[in-house]
Figure 1 (cartoon, one colour):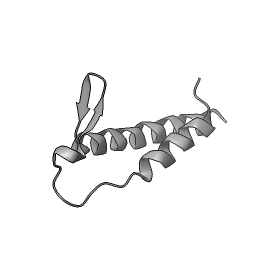
Figure 2 (figure 1 turned 120 degrees about the vertical axis):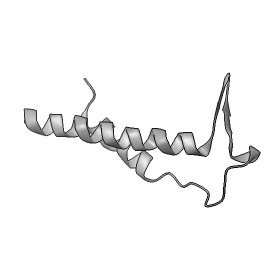
Figure 3 (figure 1 turned 120 degrees about the horizontal axis):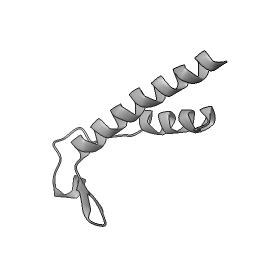
Figure 4 (figure 1 turned 90 degrees about the vertical axis):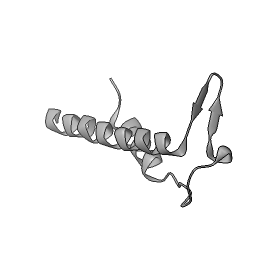
Length: 64
């Protein structure tokens, strides 16, 4: 089970991400081993993290 503290940390991290105002360029790509992710994809992932952590935090509150 994921603790409420971890959910809050993930949510805070996703809310505080800064993205460049200009269009993504080659330098805006984040390269991991075998994976390349654009800024647009990262923004979408962080939005999903925010939505999912909110749902899980709501479930924690209902259980209390």
